[in-house]
Amino acid sequence: MARMQNFILFCLACFILSGCNHYAFMETATPNIPAARFNAELAISYLKRGDTAQAQAKLRLALAQAPSDPLVLDTMAYYYEVTGNIDLASSYYAGAMIQAPESGTIMNNYGAFLCRQGYYSTSIPFFIKAAKTHYAQADHAYANARYCASLMHHELGEHTEYAYYNRLLWKSPNIPTNEQP
Image (tube, rainbow, N blue to C red; front, side, top):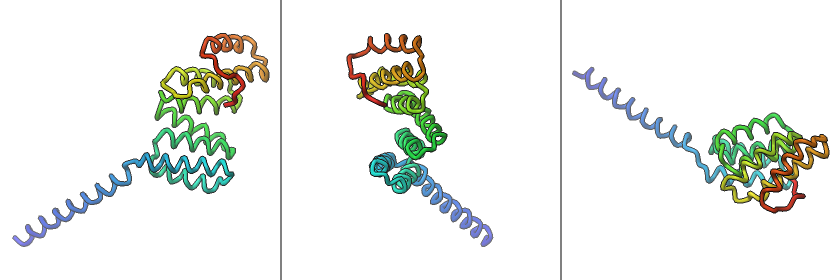
């Protein structure tokens, strides 16, 4: 009988301890998106001041808080782009696109990255798609598309593609054409 009581107490203790571990895991697994986005915004501020070490620290914290949040991934991508690690930047931009394939902000930012890397004709469809979502800055997306089309024309001499995008983009809302992505 004592053996049975000890066995039952042992099983009960294991059950209680495993329950505690389960809740501890849930606390670390549940993303804290507001805190992560705040840290990502802080990282952008540090980047603007040239403090890449602080920016990286805030972004690592943001990733720990919400590892699959598209805005955190997008900010991490921008950090890597600014600091010269284009391969990692590309990876994080792609990750943000996977997490939020219909986000106008993410599409516009990815298009801007592609344009800055010289992939003009690849970037333009991202801008156009971003502008057609409920993206609040659709005019900027169209301006970015026009800017990249002009770079494609001037730097690459792509007259046919430029003419196509130029006609397509001028059918879009009348917006400034000299903004850079």
